[in-house]
Image (cartoon, rainbow, N blue to C red; front, top):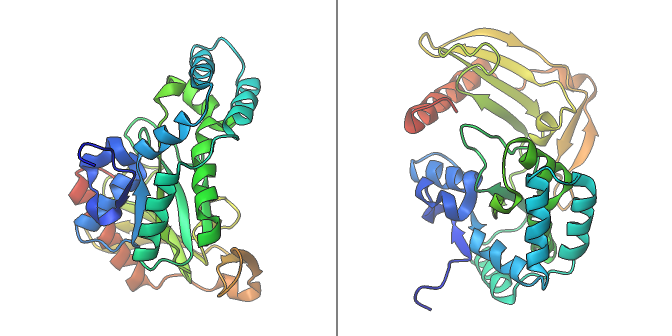
Length: 294
């Protein structure tokens, strides 16, 4: 009805202006999609859906009180996280949200998806919430709503509350959106920094690449190949071959990603020089679009 909040938005209808509704991760994905970059299709559950979820908890005032006590450093995080867990476990997915989620999932023709937390205070210039909130890979239709709920609950985990308190966030400021995005069974994955994250040289970008899903790099489980590229010269300044012993692989019809031993194949290059340079060009275009290192 007119004036009612949106609970679900397609990524191609989102840009950075929607940050307060869908959080940093979803806003960035939509922004990149609108700018013409290749982004797997999907949608975001807005923070209005999260708020409606919390309204199903009868003792919401107590939840708010506990969060403020953590933020004020009056109590230890662990017992508060445990109490919040017990109170919030009874909260169920609001029917109107569930209906919108499943309708858009089916309309987009999605199968396996990644379900990713997207906090409104995420992907900013001062704080990085990566690793604090939950992500679930290769989620099917019958488990989708529960994994969305698990992402919401991760906003109140011991890890998240401790990070929020250490960085000056009132616990009540943590509001959660969730990205549901087509799961890509990557043969090669990676991470790119448009400015070298260690040396901070503005002309140098850094690329890390691995066989299989990129979660292997994020988790620190493997040693990726590394490329350092000069943006002004368009040349590779340094490359290091990581001997990857195992890969996280999404096999067809598998219930979840699995680790596969690579043997000697793990020492093969993950990217050709031409591919590394092509990706460095993508990084430069993304940096130019945002006007800052990415």
